[in-house]
Each structure stands twice: as structure tokens, then as C-alpha cells.
Length: 265
Image (cartoon, rainbow, N blue to C red; front, side, top):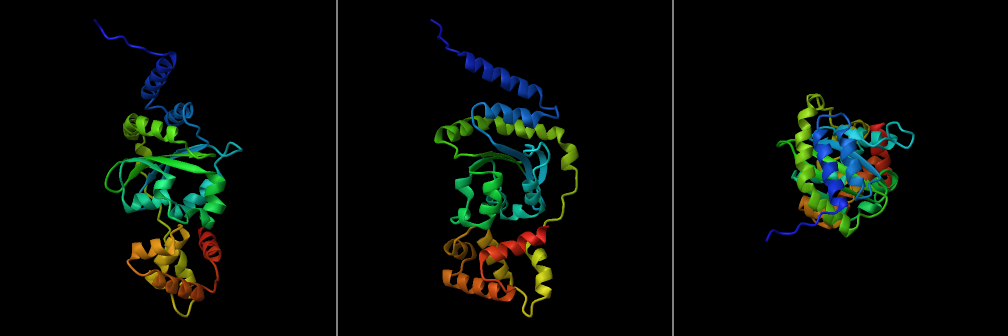
């Protein structure tokens, strides 16, 4: 006797939608069509498709702002705030394929940072996941999905399941993104470049270690995390922070963030 197969109308609709998506791989609205399909099953309030590299991220597609035009908050991200993005930092430290949740990559004190309070919470709102596809040793294609609420365990399980076909589709799409990939990557703002001007006004320039402590602080790392990453003691971290604040004439992490933000404008 043959096996009985039970197929629901929802199954048929899903497979038809995936088929249309594959057929439209070469169309300009491919990324929008992909997100709309995912949005039927996983609530998505913001999204963007990026190529991460050592340079400034390249944008392949993004959701429009509330007025239908480019999102001004995302423009700030591209100017330099991406240097504080936990997904960008995690990808640069250890590029790899897969599904990554904010909780997987965010430093211990991320929600206490000015970056989170003044940018992330306003732009992404509550939660974010990335599907990453390594294109080569230097570049990673990333589909970012943001939500006004936390993604549920069920939604994460579904994303884990469907990434097995979403990721290959993302890779195949890159054959039609040659124009973007052939563009020269914009110069990367760096901690050293934005502080160079400040350093010239200081009697004693910031040391490389003080610079690194400042970067990790602004990205949300606790003293213990910074100490572990730099292989120094937590007390030494505090000393570097004190010296950095003194040289810059500031008294708080918020003032340090403002210096960084002003340098990007």
C-alpha cells in the first residue's frame, strides 16, 4: 500500500510563494519579495540587506522610512554608527554563515549604551536577527530583520528551519548584484581617525590601549568583558578609562559617545 500524504492549503500557498520567489531571483524587487514572504509567518517591522566587510557596509536593499524615503536614522548608521553595531563587530571578529540573534552577539551592557538608547531602540525598536552568508574571506552578505517585540522561540525555530533555503537563495541572488559588488568600498571611519583631530589638541594623545577601551565601552562591553578581550585586569580597564576621560576633558560615557557622534556628521 502506498503512503498517505496530507497537504494543507497553507502548504500549497507556501510552496507556490517560494516558487515565485525563485523565479524572480533576477528581478529588482527580489529582496522586498523575500521579506514579504517571511513577514507572513514572522512579524518584521524593519529590514535591510547589507554586505559587511572591513570597509563601510554596502546596502543592497532596505525598508523605506516612515515618509517613504530613506530612513535618516539608517543614514547615521552608515556614517559611522555601524562601528558600534554588535552584529557588525561580531561578524568582523569571526565571520561565519548562519542565523544570529541579538542576544547571541550583544555585549553584556549593550542596552545601557547611548548607541542602544539613542539609535538602536528608535530604529530597530526591540529585537533583531541576521541571516549571514559568507561570500568570500572578506565579505559577508547579511539579511537583517528587526521587530518591535522580542522574537518568540517559535519564530526563532521557524527562522532556523527556513534559513536552509533562504541562505542559498541569498547567495544565488548575488549573481545579479554585480554592479553593487564592483563599487569601491567607502573608506572606513575608525576610532583613530575620528580622534586624530582631538589628539592634535591634546598635550598627551590617547594611547592605542585607551582607544580600544573606549571602543569596547561604547559598544556595551562591561569592565570584565573588556578585561577578558584585552587580556588585562578590570582594575587596569578602569585606569585606562580614567586617563582617557581626563585627556578628553569629559566625565561620562555619554560625553564620549557625543564626541564620536559629532565626528561622523
